[in-house]
Image 1 (cartoon, rainbow, N blue to C red):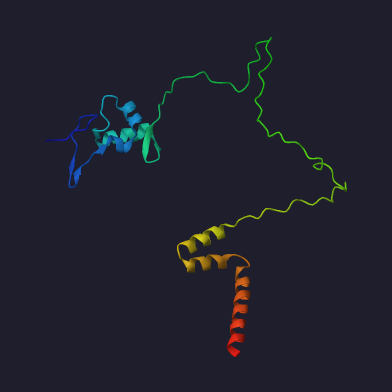
Image 2 (image 1 turned 45 degrees about the vertical axis):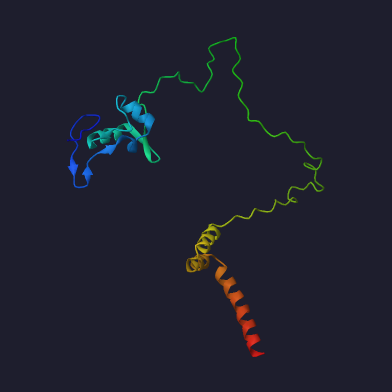
Length: 179
């Protein structure tokens, strides 16, 4: 029995490990299969590689599978960005505004004791989390201590702080061993 392509009915080539064919649902999703091949049962359809090439040309990649993008979508009237001003009696349509939170102002919001422009201090800067910290924590979670240490040594100031802490520990050990 000779296997044939479900679409073009050409014979499918036999190889050492099976046939040179692709299942339709491994390529595209069910909706796209029904649009591209309306007469086929997508669950049982196998395509030859020339038909697979056509499927690749007519579809776009979307995750694991591909989806069919209609080249001629149903034409909808294009919305213009500007309202037509040809009607003299109608005012232009109102713009939609974003809703904002309506909060009451405190009495101290705009009043300060000293009114000099340079006297007010900016709010304290938010602490920015460094990428190195998250990388190091990942290394430590996976018990990869040498990589964590190497990454920390690349950060400025860490080497000096490490030497300072190690120096204190060593001096305490020396003091304990003398007694």
